[in-house]
Image (cartoon, rainbow, N blue to C red; front, side):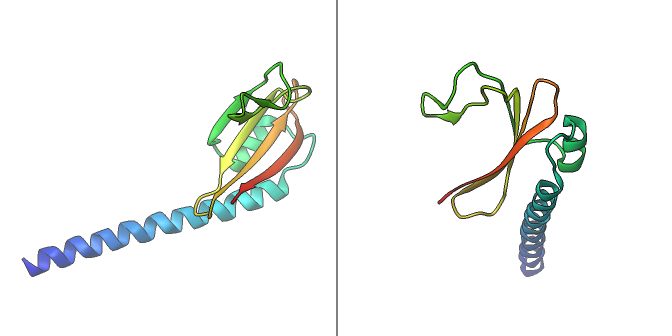
Length: 113
């Protein structure tokens, strides 16, 4: 019984360690990808660099905030892709905005304590 508990405990420790390592790796990867992303790059190049986004926000015909719930990709922004940064105190995300031709027009670092 003691060996079983030890095995379960070690397995849980390895799973937790793997989860933390994956989060740290993703955090470093997103930071490097964000720095490398330049205005004018294509959507394909950006997605290849970052990987699949956490969220995709399409164009809306309004500006500012929509009902106070989310930011709005409006005006020249036709698509916004979001990447959530793991293991932050509060919320921290990266977003990249694209125009109608699917080229980067801007990028943002969002944070909230």
